[in-house]
Image (tube, rainbow, N blue to C red):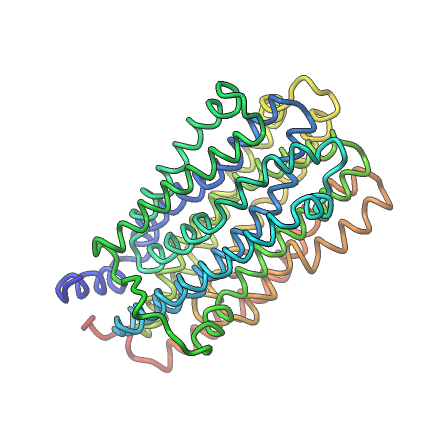
Length: 462
C-alpha cells in the first residue's frame, strides 16, 4: 500500500464520526460472524436429520471447534490489536513483523493440535462427553475437523488482521464465501453422497479451505495494509509472549467456551441423549444470536485500538459508549425474536422428538432472557483488550463461561436436576453483567483522565 493510501486510511480511522465508522466496520464483521456460525448451525441442522445421537455428536465436536477458534482468535486478536495500534502510531514495518509472526505461530500450534487430536481421538471424544451411542458419530465428524484444523485456524487469524486494520469487508468476503459453500455442500455430502456425519465435517473442511485461499489472496495481492512475509517472522520470544498476552482475554473466552461446552455435555449426558441434543441445538442458536453482538464488537475494536494508538482518547470513549448502548439494543431485539419463535426454531431441528423439543425450547427461552446483558459485557471486554488492558479484560472474559459458569454447572444439576443444566448459563450471564458494570466505569474514568492530559484529540490528523 502506497503512502497516499496509508494517509487516507489513517484519516478515515481518526476523523470519520464514530457512529458512522463503527457502522461501516460492524456490518461486514456482523455478517462474517453470522456466517461463521452458519458453519456449525448448518451442520447441526442437517446432521440432526440423521437422529438424536447424531445431533448430539455435533455438540460434542463443537468443543474441538471451540479449541481451534480459541487458537485462531487468540493469535488473531492479540497480533491484530498490536498491529492496529502500530498502524495508528504510523509504525507500518513493525505491524508487518507482528502479522507475519502471528501467522507463523498459528501454523505451528494448529498443526500440533491436529496431530494430537488424530492420535488420541477415541479417548478425546469420551472425555468431551460422548456416550456410547453418540461416540461413532462424533469420531466420524471429528476426523475431518482435525485434518482441516490448520486451515481453519489461519483463516481466523487473517480475518482478524483485516478487521484490526479497518478492512473488514475483505474478511467478510472470505468468510461469507466459505459459509455459503458449506450450506450447499452439507446436504450433498451427508445425503446425496451418503457420507452421513462425516460428510458434514468434509463440507466444513472444504469450505474453510476456500475461505483460507480467498483471505490469503488479499495479503498476497497487497490489499492489506500489512504483509505476511516469512522473512519478517520475528525470532524474539518477547514478540510471541506479547501476542499471547494481549490475546489472553480471547483465549480465556474461547478456551473456557470449550471447557464449558464439555462440562455442559457431561452434565446433560446424565439425563440422556435427548438432553445432550437439546442443549447442543439451543446452544448453537444462542451462539448464532450472540455472534451478532460479537460482530458488532469486532467492528468497534479497530476503532478503539487505532485511535488509542493515535492518542485520540475522546474517540475511544465515544466508541465504547456507542457500542455498549447499540449492542444492548441489538441483543434485545434478537433475543425477543428468538424467545417468541423458540418452538418453531427447535422443531426445525428435532421436531419429532418430544423430549428434545421440551428441553430445547425451555433452554433457549431462558437463555434469551439474559442475552441483552451481553451488550455491555462485550463492549467492556473488547474495549479493555483493544487498549492493552489484558488483565481486567482476561478476568471479564473468564467470567461468563469460567469463573461463574463452571461452578454453576457442577452445582445446579445436583440441586434441581435438568433445570440446573438449563439455568447455569443464564445465571452466569447475569453475574458477568454485574462485574462488567464495575470495569466499564473504571475504564471510562481512565479514558477521561488520559483525555484531559493529552491535547492530541484537538490536533488535526498528520
